[in-house]
Length: 239
Image (cartoon, rainbow, N blue to C red):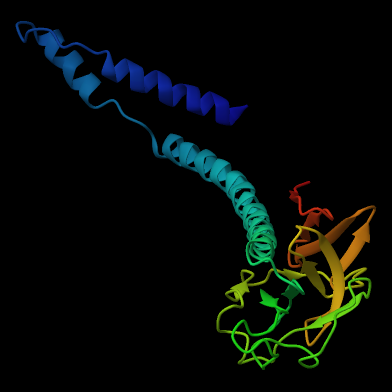
């Protein structure tokens, strides 16, 4: 209550000074009144009170602003992963991939993700270090959940493999409940979760008919689930 009274006094004095209209200096009392109005101001206590109230309001608002920024960072990271999922599916369809593309997580390093092709070299029709596979006569079993091979680091940074993307600092993939380490995209648009040799940790889990990948900001406990259906529909779930 004293704070409100003090602020009311400040406003009252402010408007009284601003509304003061000096009269002609024909009479001495007018001059005295003008001098009195000119000397009217705010006391130190009133100024400090207003500054203190402003500081309290700012201190209250700043944590909410920072919290909003952190939530936005996690959501944006999830949307970036979802975009690469959509790109991987589009590339598998566009290339009419025979064996498919695999999207690897925590590969080639923790916090990174990249899609790599499983097809043979289009010129030699053979597997090389860049086009990984167990051999030129390999036949991938589409019903096998252990499917494909990620290229060795150093052979994965040239076309036709995708660019290496990174999660922001302090944000990472959550391995809780993970069973598979990669997503397999086929030329017909279908998506499967698989374990690809040489890929990262098992991060993908199944929820109903969908595959789910979780990213987390462990310092503040923020998480985002990235859900992709078997026909390639991707959604970032925001609490």
